[in-house]
Image (tube, rainbow over all chains, first blue to last red; front, top):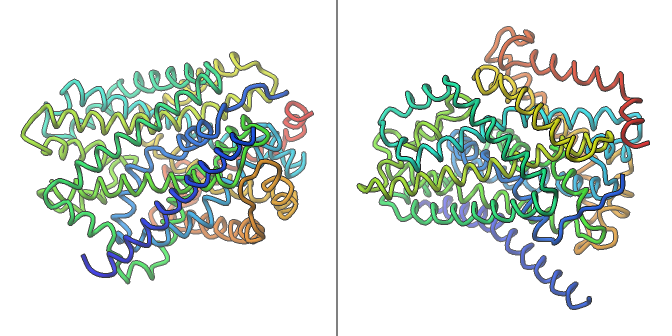
Amino acid sequence: MKLEGIITLFVVAGIVWGGLFYFLYNAVKFERNKKSDE
Amino acid sequence: MKQKEFFTSRWGLILSALGIAVGTGNIWRFSRIVAQNGGGSFLIPWVIFLLIWSIPLIIAEFAIGKSTRFGPIGAIAKTAGNKFAWMGAFIAVVTTAIMFYYSVVTGWCIRYFVSAISGNLFNTTDHLEYWNVFSQSLFPLLYHFIAMLIGAFIIYRGVVNGIEKTNKFLVTSLLIILLILLFRAVTLPNAFEGIKYFFTPKLEYILDYKVWLSALTQNAWDTGAGWGLILTYAVYMKKNEDISLNAALIGFGNNSVSLIAGITIFSTVFALSSVDAMTQISQSGPANTGLTFIYLPLLFSKISSSLLVNTFFAGIFFLALSFAAMSSLISMMELSTRTFIDFGLNRKKAIAVVGLMGFIFGIPSALNMDFFTNQDWVWGVGLILSGAFISFSIIRYGVDKFRTEIINAEGSDIKIGKWYNFVIAFLIPFQVVVLLTWWLVSSASWDPEWWNPFHVENAGTCLFQWGLVLALFITINKTLVRKTVI
Protein backbone atom coordinates (compact mmCIF):
# COMPACT_ATOMS: atom_id res chain seq x y z
CA MET A 1 0.00 0.00 0.00
CA LYS A 2 1.23 3.49 -0.82
CA LEU A 3 2.12 5.90 1.99
CA GLU A 4 -0.96 8.10 1.42
CA GLY A 5 -3.17 5.00 1.74
CA ILE A 6 -1.56 4.06 5.05
CA ILE A 7 -1.93 7.63 6.35
CA THR A 8 -5.62 7.74 5.31
CA LEU A 9 -6.23 4.36 6.95
CA PHE A 10 -4.72 5.54 10.24
CA VAL A 11 -6.42 8.96 10.16
CA VAL A 12 -9.90 7.73 9.15
CA ALA A 13 -9.95 4.51 11.16
CA GLY A 14 -8.17 6.31 14.01
CA ILE A 15 -10.78 9.08 14.24
CA VAL A 16 -13.83 6.85 13.70
CA TRP A 17 -12.85 3.80 15.77
CA GLY A 18 -10.71 5.87 18.16
CA GLY A 19 -13.68 8.19 18.74
CA LEU A 20 -16.00 5.25 19.29
CA PHE A 21 -13.73 3.61 21.88
CA TYR A 22 -12.94 6.93 23.57
CA PHE A 23 -16.62 7.77 24.10
CA LEU A 24 -17.45 4.16 24.97
CA TYR A 25 -14.74 4.17 27.64
CA ASN A 26 -16.10 7.42 29.06
CA ALA A 27 -19.70 6.19 29.01
CA VAL A 28 -18.69 3.05 30.96
CA LYS A 29 -16.74 5.20 33.41
CA PHE A 30 -19.65 7.61 34.00
CA GLU A 31 -22.12 4.74 34.43
CA ARG A 32 -19.84 3.11 37.04
CA ASN A 33 -19.52 6.39 38.91
CA LYS A 34 -23.28 6.93 38.86
CA LYS A 35 -23.85 3.41 40.21
CA SER A 36 -21.27 3.83 42.98
CA ASP A 37 -22.86 7.20 43.94
CA GLU A 38 -26.24 5.49 44.29
CA MET B 1 -49.76 13.47 27.90
CA LYS B 2 -47.41 12.48 30.74
CA GLN B 3 -44.68 10.12 29.68
CA LYS B 4 -44.76 6.88 31.66
CA GLU B 5 -42.40 4.51 29.92
CA PHE B 6 -38.64 5.09 29.68
CA PHE B 7 -35.59 3.23 28.36
CA THR B 8 -34.36 1.19 31.31
CA SER B 9 -30.64 1.84 30.79
CA ARG B 10 -28.16 3.97 28.92
CA TRP B 11 -27.10 0.92 26.87
CA GLY B 12 -30.71 0.19 25.91
CA LEU B 13 -31.10 3.75 24.65
CA ILE B 14 -27.75 3.74 22.80
CA LEU B 15 -28.39 0.39 21.10
CA SER B 16 -31.90 1.51 20.11
CA ALA B 17 -30.61 4.79 18.67
CA LEU B 18 -27.80 2.88 16.95
CA GLY B 19 -30.52 0.69 15.47
CA ILE B 20 -32.01 3.83 13.90
CA ALA B 21 -28.69 4.95 12.44
CA VAL B 22 -27.39 1.60 11.25
CA GLY B 23 -29.49 0.62 8.27
CA THR B 24 -29.12 -0.83 4.82
CA GLY B 25 -27.44 2.44 3.74
CA ASN B 26 -24.35 1.55 5.81
CA ILE B 27 -23.99 -1.68 3.92
CA TRP B 28 -25.05 -1.12 0.32
CA ARG B 29 -25.00 2.64 -0.25
CA PHE B 30 -21.77 3.44 1.59
CA SER B 31 -19.62 0.96 -0.39
CA ARG B 32 -21.05 2.10 -3.72
CA ILE B 33 -20.52 5.78 -2.96
CA VAL B 34 -16.94 5.17 -1.77
CA ALA B 35 -16.21 3.32 -5.01
CA GLN B 36 -17.71 6.09 -7.14
CA ASN B 37 -15.81 8.82 -5.31
CA GLY B 38 -12.22 7.66 -5.33
CA GLY B 39 -11.91 5.40 -2.26
CA GLY B 40 -9.86 7.12 0.43
CA SER B 41 -10.56 10.54 -1.12
CA PHE B 42 -14.18 10.17 -0.05
CA LEU B 43 -13.39 8.97 3.47
CA ILE B 44 -11.68 12.21 4.53
CA PRO B 45 -14.67 14.57 3.93
CA TRP B 46 -16.96 11.80 5.20
CA VAL B 47 -15.25 11.95 8.61
CA ILE B 48 -15.33 15.77 8.62
CA PHE B 49 -19.09 15.85 7.94
CA LEU B 50 -19.67 13.31 10.71
CA LEU B 51 -18.34 15.99 13.05
CA ILE B 52 -20.05 19.06 11.58
CA TRP B 53 -23.40 17.61 10.44
CA SER B 54 -24.33 14.28 12.01
CA ILE B 55 -23.21 14.60 15.63
CA PRO B 56 -24.47 18.20 16.15
CA LEU B 57 -27.89 17.23 14.74
CA ILE B 58 -28.06 14.03 16.80
CA ILE B 59 -27.32 16.15 19.89
CA ALA B 60 -30.07 18.58 18.82
CA GLU B 61 -32.64 15.83 18.36
CA PHE B 62 -31.85 14.21 21.72
CA ALA B 63 -32.15 17.58 23.44
CA ILE B 64 -35.42 18.60 21.75
CA GLY B 65 -37.12 15.22 22.36
CA LYS B 66 -35.95 14.96 25.97
CA SER B 67 -36.92 18.51 26.89
CA THR B 68 -40.33 18.64 25.17
CA ARG B 69 -41.48 14.98 25.54
CA PHE B 70 -43.39 15.31 22.24
CA GLY B 71 -43.10 13.76 18.79
CA PRO B 72 -41.93 16.05 15.92
CA ILE B 73 -45.02 18.32 15.73
CA GLY B 74 -45.25 19.15 19.42
CA ALA B 75 -41.47 19.20 19.80
CA ILE B 76 -40.93 21.81 17.07
CA ALA B 77 -43.94 23.85 18.27
CA LYS B 78 -42.54 23.90 21.81
CA THR B 79 -39.02 24.77 20.65
CA ALA B 80 -39.55 27.18 17.74
CA GLY B 81 -42.99 28.49 18.72
CA ASN B 82 -46.54 27.40 17.92
CA LYS B 83 -46.64 29.08 14.53
CA PHE B 84 -43.95 26.66 13.31
CA ALA B 85 -45.74 23.41 14.17
CA TRP B 86 -46.08 22.78 10.43
CA MET B 87 -42.32 22.25 10.27
CA GLY B 88 -42.67 19.38 12.73
CA ALA B 89 -45.52 17.98 10.64
CA PHE B 90 -43.29 18.11 7.56
CA ILE B 91 -40.55 16.19 9.42
CA ALA B 92 -43.13 13.58 10.49
CA VAL B 93 -44.49 13.21 6.94
CA VAL B 94 -41.03 12.87 5.36
CA THR B 95 -40.04 10.05 7.70
CA THR B 96 -43.47 8.39 7.45
CA ALA B 97 -43.28 8.51 3.63
CA ILE B 98 -39.83 6.89 3.86
CA MET B 99 -41.34 4.23 6.14
CA PHE B 100 -43.83 3.30 3.40
CA TYR B 101 -41.11 2.21 0.99
CA TYR B 102 -38.48 1.25 3.58
CA SER B 103 -40.80 -1.55 4.65
CA VAL B 104 -40.56 -2.81 1.05
CA VAL B 105 -36.74 -2.73 1.29
CA THR B 106 -36.91 -4.62 4.59
CA GLY B 107 -39.13 -7.17 2.84
CA TRP B 108 -36.52 -7.63 0.06
CA CYS B 109 -33.84 -8.33 2.69
CA ILE B 110 -36.05 -10.87 4.48
CA ARG B 111 -36.87 -12.52 1.14
CA TYR B 112 -33.19 -12.84 0.20
CA PHE B 113 -32.39 -14.24 3.65
CA VAL B 114 -35.08 -16.91 3.13
CA SER B 115 -33.76 -17.57 -0.40
CA ALA B 116 -30.20 -17.88 0.90
CA ILE B 117 -30.89 -20.33 3.72
CA SER B 118 -33.26 -22.43 1.60
CA GLY B 119 -30.51 -22.80 -1.02
CA ASN B 120 -32.81 -21.27 -3.65
CA LEU B 121 -30.43 -18.34 -4.19
CA PHE B 122 -27.68 -20.62 -5.49
CA ASN B 123 -29.94 -22.55 -7.86
CA THR B 124 -29.28 -19.89 -10.46
CA THR B 125 -26.20 -18.20 -11.87
CA ASP B 126 -28.15 -15.33 -13.47
CA HIS B 127 -28.78 -13.15 -10.43
CA LEU B 128 -29.97 -10.17 -12.48
CA GLU B 129 -32.74 -12.31 -13.89
CA TYR B 130 -33.44 -13.73 -10.40
CA TRP B 131 -33.85 -10.17 -9.08
CA ASN B 132 -36.03 -9.10 -12.03
CA VAL B 133 -38.36 -12.09 -11.66
CA PHE B 134 -38.67 -11.43 -7.92
CA SER B 135 -39.16 -7.65 -8.15
CA GLN B 136 -41.81 -7.99 -10.87
CA SER B 137 -43.78 -10.65 -9.00
CA LEU B 138 -46.22 -10.25 -6.11
CA PHE B 139 -43.63 -11.49 -3.60
CA PRO B 140 -42.38 -7.96 -2.71
CA LEU B 141 -45.95 -7.19 -1.62
CA LEU B 142 -46.10 -10.30 0.58
CA TYR B 143 -42.73 -9.52 2.19
CA HIS B 144 -43.68 -5.86 2.63
CA PHE B 145 -46.72 -7.09 4.57
CA ILE B 146 -44.55 -9.41 6.67
CA ALA B 147 -42.09 -6.58 7.44
CA MET B 148 -44.91 -4.22 8.52
CA LEU B 149 -46.49 -6.98 10.63
CA ILE B 150 -43.23 -7.73 12.46
CA GLY B 151 -42.57 -4.00 12.96
CA ALA B 152 -46.07 -3.37 14.31
CA PHE B 153 -45.78 -6.34 16.68
CA ILE B 154 -42.47 -5.03 18.07
CA ILE B 155 -43.71 -1.51 18.77
CA TYR B 156 -47.03 -2.87 20.09
CA ARG B 157 -45.00 -4.49 22.90
CA GLY B 158 -43.97 -1.00 24.03
CA VAL B 159 -40.76 0.95 24.48
CA VAL B 160 -39.06 -1.35 26.99
CA ASN B 161 -40.35 -4.81 26.01
CA GLY B 162 -40.60 -4.02 22.32
CA ILE B 163 -38.18 -1.37 21.04
CA GLU B 164 -35.43 -1.66 23.67
CA LYS B 165 -35.33 -5.46 23.96
CA THR B 166 -35.55 -5.99 20.20
CA ASN B 167 -32.82 -3.49 19.43
CA LYS B 168 -30.53 -4.98 22.08
CA PHE B 169 -30.87 -8.29 20.25
CA LEU B 170 -30.87 -6.99 16.65
CA VAL B 171 -27.99 -4.52 16.94
CA THR B 172 -25.77 -6.83 19.00
CA SER B 173 -26.38 -9.71 16.58
CA LEU B 174 -25.80 -7.42 13.61
CA LEU B 175 -22.41 -6.33 14.98
CA ILE B 176 -21.35 -9.94 15.67
CA ILE B 177 -22.39 -11.03 12.15
CA LEU B 178 -20.56 -8.11 10.54
CA LEU B 179 -17.39 -9.00 12.48
CA ILE B 180 -17.64 -12.64 11.34
CA LEU B 181 -18.10 -11.49 7.73
CA LEU B 182 -15.21 -9.01 8.09
CA PHE B 183 -12.92 -11.79 9.32
CA ARG B 184 -13.92 -14.06 6.43
CA ALA B 185 -13.55 -11.28 3.87
CA VAL B 186 -10.10 -10.05 4.89
CA THR B 187 -8.75 -13.61 4.99
CA LEU B 188 -9.75 -14.27 1.37
CA PRO B 189 -6.82 -14.35 -1.09
CA ASN B 190 -6.23 -10.96 -2.73
CA ALA B 191 -8.51 -9.21 -0.22
CA PHE B 192 -5.75 -6.71 0.53
CA GLU B 193 -6.18 -5.22 -2.95
CA GLY B 194 -9.68 -4.16 -1.93
CA ILE B 195 -8.49 -2.64 1.35
CA LYS B 196 -5.77 -0.82 -0.56
CA TYR B 197 -8.30 0.69 -2.98
CA PHE B 198 -10.69 1.50 -0.13
CA PHE B 199 -8.16 3.63 1.75
CA THR B 200 -5.93 5.07 -0.98
CA PRO B 201 -6.93 8.68 -1.77
CA LYS B 202 -6.65 10.17 -5.26
CA LEU B 203 -5.71 13.82 -5.41
CA GLU B 204 -8.04 14.67 -8.31
CA TYR B 205 -11.02 13.35 -6.32
CA ILE B 206 -10.12 15.21 -3.11
CA LEU B 207 -10.21 18.50 -5.00
CA ASP B 208 -13.57 17.67 -6.61
CA TYR B 209 -16.47 19.45 -4.87
CA LYS B 210 -18.85 16.63 -5.86
CA VAL B 211 -16.92 14.19 -3.67
CA TRP B 212 -17.42 16.53 -0.71
CA LEU B 213 -21.13 16.88 -1.47
CA SER B 214 -21.48 13.09 -1.77
CA ALA B 215 -19.77 12.72 1.62
CA LEU B 216 -22.17 15.23 3.19
CA THR B 217 -25.16 13.52 1.59
CA GLN B 218 -24.00 10.11 2.85
CA ASN B 219 -23.75 11.48 6.41
CA ALA B 220 -27.13 13.20 6.12
CA TRP B 221 -28.88 10.03 4.93
CA ASP B 222 -26.95 7.39 6.77
CA THR B 223 -26.68 8.52 10.39
CA GLY B 224 -30.37 9.25 10.86
CA ALA B 225 -29.52 12.79 11.94
CA GLY B 226 -32.29 15.27 11.15
CA TRP B 227 -34.93 12.61 10.50
CA GLY B 228 -36.86 13.19 13.75
CA LEU B 229 -36.29 9.55 14.75
CA ILE B 230 -33.75 10.18 17.50
CA LEU B 231 -36.02 13.01 18.70
CA THR B 232 -38.82 10.46 19.07
CA TYR B 233 -36.72 7.94 21.02
CA ALA B 234 -35.45 10.83 23.19
CA VAL B 235 -39.04 11.28 24.43
CA TYR B 236 -38.43 8.04 26.37
CA MET B 237 -35.09 9.12 27.90
CA LYS B 238 -34.87 9.39 31.66
CA LYS B 239 -34.65 12.92 33.04
CA ASN B 240 -31.07 12.55 34.27
CA GLU B 241 -29.85 10.84 31.08
CA ASP B 242 -26.84 12.33 29.27
CA ILE B 243 -27.21 13.81 25.76
CA SER B 244 -23.84 14.72 24.25
CA LEU B 245 -21.84 11.60 25.08
CA ASN B 246 -24.67 9.35 23.87
CA ALA B 247 -24.95 11.36 20.64
CA ALA B 248 -21.21 11.08 19.98
CA LEU B 249 -21.34 7.33 20.60
CA ILE B 250 -24.15 6.93 18.08
CA GLY B 251 -22.41 9.03 15.40
CA PHE B 252 -19.06 7.30 15.77
CA GLY B 253 -20.75 3.90 16.21
CA ASN B 254 -22.72 4.31 12.99
CA ASN B 255 -19.69 5.33 10.95
CA SER B 256 -17.65 2.50 12.51
CA VAL B 257 -20.23 0.04 11.19
CA SER B 258 -19.96 1.65 7.74
CA LEU B 259 -16.18 1.22 7.78
CA ILE B 260 -16.49 -2.45 8.75
CA ALA B 261 -19.07 -3.03 6.01
CA GLY B 262 -16.95 -1.15 3.46
CA ILE B 263 -13.79 -3.15 4.21
CA THR B 264 -15.82 -6.38 4.06
CA ILE B 265 -17.42 -5.58 0.71
CA PHE B 266 -14.28 -4.21 -0.97
CA SER B 267 -12.23 -7.20 0.23
CA THR B 268 -14.86 -9.67 -0.97
CA VAL B 269 -15.34 -8.04 -4.36
CA PHE B 270 -11.61 -7.67 -5.10
CA ALA B 271 -10.90 -11.21 -3.89
CA LEU B 272 -13.61 -13.01 -5.81
CA SER B 273 -14.43 -10.90 -8.82
CA SER B 274 -13.30 -12.30 -12.14
CA VAL B 275 -14.39 -9.15 -13.97
CA ASP B 276 -13.66 -5.52 -13.22
CA ALA B 277 -14.25 -5.23 -9.47
CA MET B 278 -14.72 -1.49 -9.51
CA THR B 279 -17.48 -1.59 -12.11
CA GLN B 280 -19.30 -4.12 -10.00
CA ILE B 281 -19.06 -2.15 -6.75
CA SER B 282 -20.01 1.12 -8.42
CA GLN B 283 -23.08 -0.20 -10.18
CA SER B 284 -26.28 1.18 -8.82
CA GLY B 285 -29.07 -0.93 -10.24
CA PRO B 286 -32.69 -0.11 -9.51
CA ALA B 287 -32.94 1.70 -6.16
CA ASN B 288 -29.22 1.05 -5.42
CA THR B 289 -29.84 -2.68 -5.38
CA GLY B 290 -27.26 -3.72 -7.97
CA LEU B 291 -24.38 -4.57 -5.67
CA THR B 292 -26.40 -6.17 -2.90
CA PHE B 293 -29.06 -8.20 -4.62
CA ILE B 294 -27.45 -8.91 -7.96
CA TYR B 295 -23.70 -9.06 -7.56
CA LEU B 296 -23.06 -10.16 -3.97
CA PRO B 297 -25.13 -13.39 -4.30
CA LEU B 298 -22.86 -14.30 -7.21
CA LEU B 299 -19.78 -13.64 -5.08
CA PHE B 300 -21.15 -15.65 -2.16
CA SER B 301 -21.45 -18.64 -4.48
CA LYS B 302 -17.68 -18.41 -5.02
CA ILE B 303 -16.50 -18.09 -1.41
CA SER B 304 -15.66 -21.80 -1.28
CA SER B 305 -16.37 -25.05 -3.09
CA SER B 306 -18.72 -26.11 -0.30
CA LEU B 307 -22.36 -25.17 -0.88
CA LEU B 308 -22.98 -25.35 2.87
CA VAL B 309 -20.27 -22.78 3.65
CA ASN B 310 -21.48 -20.45 0.89
CA THR B 311 -25.07 -20.79 2.10
CA PHE B 312 -23.93 -19.97 5.65
CA PHE B 313 -22.15 -16.75 4.65
CA ALA B 314 -24.89 -15.60 2.27
CA GLY B 315 -27.49 -16.44 4.95
CA ILE B 316 -25.81 -14.44 7.71
CA PHE B 317 -25.14 -11.51 5.34
CA PHE B 318 -28.82 -11.17 4.41
CA LEU B 319 -29.78 -11.80 8.04
CA ALA B 320 -27.56 -8.86 9.04
CA LEU B 321 -29.14 -6.76 6.32
CA SER B 322 -32.64 -7.73 7.53
CA PHE B 323 -31.71 -6.86 11.13
CA ALA B 324 -30.28 -3.48 10.05
CA ALA B 325 -33.41 -2.70 8.05
CA MET B 326 -35.84 -3.87 10.76
CA SER B 327 -34.16 -1.85 13.54
CA SER B 328 -34.54 1.28 11.38
CA LEU B 329 -38.09 0.43 10.25
CA ILE B 330 -39.39 0.14 13.83
CA SER B 331 -38.02 3.59 14.64
CA MET B 332 -39.92 5.07 11.68
CA MET B 333 -43.09 3.29 12.78
CA GLU B 334 -42.59 4.56 16.33
CA LEU B 335 -42.26 8.15 15.04
CA SER B 336 -45.60 7.89 13.22
CA THR B 337 -47.18 6.15 16.21
CA ARG B 338 -45.90 8.84 18.58
CA THR B 339 -47.35 11.52 16.32
CA PHE B 340 -50.80 9.92 16.51
CA ILE B 341 -50.43 9.47 20.29
CA ASP B 342 -49.72 13.21 20.55
CA PHE B 343 -52.99 13.76 18.65
CA GLY B 344 -54.79 11.91 21.46
CA LEU B 345 -55.01 8.32 20.17
CA ASN B 346 -54.05 5.52 22.55
CA ARG B 347 -51.00 3.45 21.65
CA LYS B 348 -52.93 0.40 20.36
CA LYS B 349 -55.11 2.45 18.02
CA ALA B 350 -52.13 4.50 16.84
CA ILE B 351 -50.19 1.34 15.96
CA ALA B 352 -53.19 -0.09 14.12
CA VAL B 353 -53.51 3.12 12.08
CA VAL B 354 -49.75 3.25 11.32
CA GLY B 355 -49.57 -0.46 10.43
CA LEU B 356 -52.56 -0.29 8.10
CA MET B 357 -51.50 3.01 6.55
CA GLY B 358 -47.92 1.77 6.14
CA PHE B 359 -49.06 -1.36 4.35
CA ILE B 360 -51.52 0.42 2.04
CA PHE B 361 -49.26 3.33 1.07
CA GLY B 362 -46.30 0.97 0.64
CA ILE B 363 -48.15 -1.11 -1.97
CA PRO B 364 -47.27 1.13 -4.99
CA SER B 365 -43.56 1.00 -4.05
CA ALA B 366 -43.75 -2.79 -3.65
CA LEU B 367 -45.23 -3.24 -7.10
CA ASN B 368 -43.63 -0.50 -9.17
CA MET B 369 -39.91 0.30 -9.17
CA ASP B 370 -40.46 3.73 -10.76
CA PHE B 371 -42.81 4.71 -7.95
CA PHE B 372 -40.28 3.38 -5.43
CA THR B 373 -37.44 5.39 -7.03
CA ASN B 374 -39.61 8.54 -7.08
CA GLN B 375 -40.43 8.27 -3.37
CA ASP B 376 -36.82 7.47 -2.47
CA TRP B 377 -35.73 10.60 -4.37
CA VAL B 378 -38.41 13.02 -3.13
CA TRP B 379 -38.28 12.16 0.56
CA GLY B 380 -34.56 11.35 0.62
CA VAL B 381 -33.80 14.91 -0.48
CA GLY B 382 -36.65 16.12 1.77
CA LEU B 383 -34.65 14.89 4.77
CA ILE B 384 -32.19 17.72 4.21
CA LEU B 385 -35.10 20.12 4.68
CA SER B 386 -36.05 18.26 7.87
CA GLY B 387 -32.51 18.84 9.17
CA ALA B 388 -32.90 22.53 8.31
CA PHE B 389 -36.15 22.78 10.29
CA ILE B 390 -34.52 21.24 13.36
CA SER B 391 -31.64 23.69 13.11
CA PHE B 392 -34.12 26.58 12.57
CA SER B 393 -36.05 25.61 15.72
CA ILE B 394 -32.93 25.87 17.83
CA ILE B 395 -32.01 29.23 16.30
CA ARG B 396 -35.54 30.48 17.13
CA TYR B 397 -35.21 29.17 20.68
CA GLY B 398 -31.78 30.76 21.10
CA VAL B 399 -28.75 28.57 20.37
CA ASP B 400 -26.75 29.51 23.46
CA LYS B 401 -29.78 29.15 25.74
CA PHE B 402 -30.51 25.76 24.16
CA ARG B 403 -26.92 24.61 24.70
CA THR B 404 -26.56 25.75 28.29
CA GLU B 405 -30.09 25.05 29.59
CA ILE B 406 -31.01 21.87 27.72
CA ILE B 407 -27.93 20.09 26.33
CA ASN B 408 -25.67 20.86 29.30
CA ALA B 409 -28.50 20.42 31.84
CA GLU B 410 -28.61 18.07 34.83
CA GLY B 411 -27.34 14.60 33.98
CA SER B 412 -24.95 15.60 31.22
CA ASP B 413 -21.66 13.74 31.41
CA ILE B 414 -19.77 16.10 29.14
CA LYS B 415 -20.42 19.79 28.54
CA ILE B 416 -20.70 21.12 25.01
CA GLY B 417 -18.71 24.29 24.32
CA LYS B 418 -19.56 27.42 22.36
CA TRP B 419 -18.42 25.80 19.09
CA TYR B 420 -21.88 24.23 19.00
CA ASN B 421 -23.53 27.64 18.58
CA PHE B 422 -21.50 28.29 15.43
CA VAL B 423 -22.23 24.84 13.97
CA ILE B 424 -26.01 25.06 14.48
CA ALA B 425 -26.44 28.74 13.60
CA PHE B 426 -24.12 28.86 10.56
CA LEU B 427 -22.58 25.58 9.42
CA ILE B 428 -25.75 23.46 9.31
CA PRO B 429 -27.85 26.11 7.46
CA PHE B 430 -24.95 26.64 5.04
CA GLN B 431 -24.68 22.90 4.37
CA VAL B 432 -28.45 22.68 3.86
CA VAL B 433 -28.47 25.46 1.27
CA VAL B 434 -25.49 23.99 -0.61
CA LEU B 435 -26.89 20.43 -0.58
CA LEU B 436 -30.44 21.33 -1.59
CA THR B 437 -29.23 23.60 -4.39
CA TRP B 438 -26.79 20.97 -5.64
CA TRP B 439 -29.32 18.12 -5.71
CA LEU B 440 -32.09 20.13 -7.32
CA VAL B 441 -29.83 21.82 -9.88
CA SER B 442 -28.07 18.50 -10.69
CA SER B 443 -31.41 16.92 -11.48
CA ALA B 444 -31.71 19.35 -14.40
CA SER B 445 -28.64 17.72 -15.95
CA TRP B 446 -30.29 14.28 -16.12
CA ASP B 447 -33.81 15.50 -16.93
CA PRO B 448 -34.26 18.36 -19.44
CA GLU B 449 -37.86 18.65 -18.26
CA TRP B 450 -36.59 19.31 -14.72
CA TRP B 451 -39.80 21.18 -13.85
CA ASN B 452 -42.18 18.31 -14.75
CA PRO B 453 -43.76 17.07 -11.48
CA PHE B 454 -44.74 13.74 -13.03
CA HIS B 455 -41.22 12.59 -13.83
CA VAL B 456 -39.50 10.06 -11.57
CA GLU B 457 -36.40 11.95 -10.44
CA ASN B 458 -36.17 15.70 -10.91
CA ALA B 459 -36.57 19.02 -9.10
CA GLY B 460 -40.19 19.40 -10.23
CA THR B 461 -41.46 16.25 -8.52
CA CYS B 462 -39.70 17.23 -5.27
CA LEU B 463 -41.03 20.77 -5.25
CA PHE B 464 -44.53 19.57 -6.18
CA GLN B 465 -44.81 16.93 -3.46
CA TRP B 466 -43.10 19.04 -0.77
CA GLY B 467 -45.25 22.00 -1.81
CA LEU B 468 -48.47 20.00 -1.36
CA VAL B 469 -47.45 18.81 2.09
CA LEU B 470 -46.17 22.21 3.23
CA ALA B 471 -49.23 24.08 1.91
CA LEU B 472 -51.55 21.67 3.73
CA PHE B 473 -49.74 21.92 7.06
CA ILE B 474 -49.21 25.68 6.95
CA THR B 475 -52.97 26.01 6.34
CA ILE B 476 -53.94 23.79 9.28
CA ASN B 477 -51.13 24.93 11.58
CA LYS B 478 -53.50 26.18 14.30
CA THR B 479 -55.34 22.86 14.32
CA LEU B 480 -52.02 20.99 14.61
CA VAL B 481 -51.11 23.07 17.64
CA ARG B 482 -54.54 22.72 19.25
CA LYS B 483 -54.56 18.94 18.82
CA THR B 484 -51.03 18.31 20.07
CA VAL B 485 -49.53 20.81 22.49
CA ILE B 486 -52.57 22.52 24.01
